[in-house]
Length: 252
Image 1 (cartoon, one colour):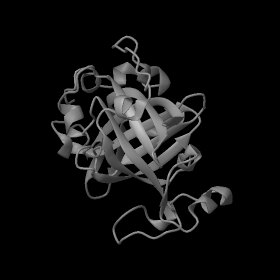
Image 2: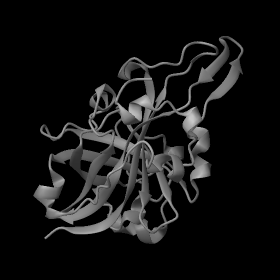
Image 3: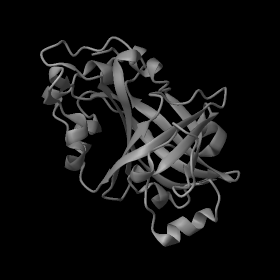
Image 4: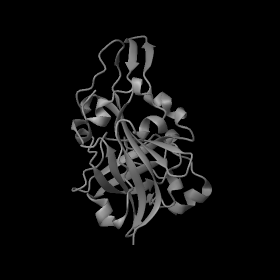
């Protein structure tokens, strides 16, 4: 039997690569993207998990691809995440004034963490855009999907060049650290294991149709341009965010 242990709102955003100030900020493909963010807002909690997907896409489901990610920031208020999403200009000695373009919204939906068959599944359903476009295809954001999720032990090492530097890894409360019992990975059960900046996780593609295969209701809502929650929930201003990636799946 499947058991939902957490559900909430889910948002995907991407940030274009840094470029010279004054240069056109339009993105034409995934190779011009610096970071892909995934924001989880658990239901009933004043908490936002800003996560980064390491290879800038979700895993392929059919091939059971494994991809790494990490929690970049945990905040009680969405305003605390603004610096990650807004445009920033800065000056360097060798390259002049540089610009980090504002993030673009690439998807809105709902997610559930589901205990099933000895694993925890991260399952989601996309509400916007109604039909995934070239943006969502570049990031492997399907209309719905399920991934087995595991949390990495921050006290265990990683291969050279893989994972976060030691100084950026999460420091867990003793009670949570003891759950690993020396193991390298465990299920995020309870989900508070993900409530720490620097927590690392692995996603493995599992199910293409989670509602049917896990027998859970992902509680998708019928959203449109007027009712999109991402602007209200993340305190984003429509005038500052290109709308095409979220509503039509076109690059901007």
